[in-house]
Amino acid sequence: MRQPAIPPASELTPHTGAVLPRLYVPEEVAAVLGCSAWWVKDRARRRLIPFTRVGRAYRFTGEHLAEIIRMHEARPALAQQPSASEPARKSPVPRPSPSPAVATAQLRARPPRRARQGQFGTAA
View 1 (cartoon, rainbow, N blue to C red):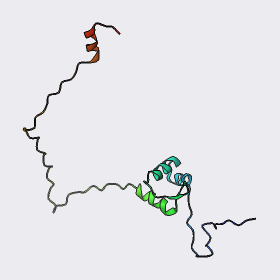
View 2 (cartoon, helix red, strand yellow; view 1 turned 90 degrees about the vertical axis):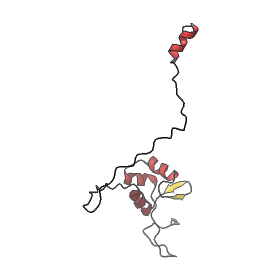
View 3 (cartoon, rainbow, N blue to C red; view 1 turned 120 degrees about the vertical axis):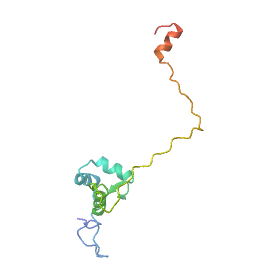
View 4 (cartoon, rainbow, N blue to C red; view 1 turned 45 degrees about the horizontal axis):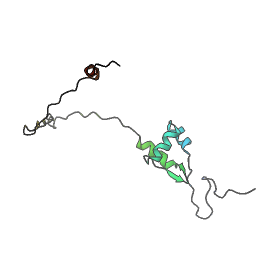
C-alpha cells in the first residue's frame, strides 16, 4: 500500500515541522456560511472573497473563511444623541438653481401611434 505524498494537515511535515493548512472545497464553505456553492464560486471568480486556486479549483483555508465572515458582517448603526456641549446641526445648504444664461429647449411629446395610424386611412 502506498503512502500519500502529502500528509494530512493535522500531522507535522517531516522536513520543516510545520503544519499544512486544511483546504476546504466551496461546498464545505457554503455549508458553513449557509449559502450555495454557486455563490461561493461566483464571488471567488469575481475576486470578491479571498481564496486559493489549486489548478482550476477554488480552495479556502480557515483564515479565508474567517475573513469572508468578517467582510460580510453587518453591525448595527449607533444612534448618536447630540450632547449639550455640541451645537445643533444646521440644515443642509440649498443648492443654487441653474443660471438663467443656459438656454433650455421645450420638449414636446409626440402623438401616440394609434392616433397616427388614422392619418393614412388604413386599418390594421
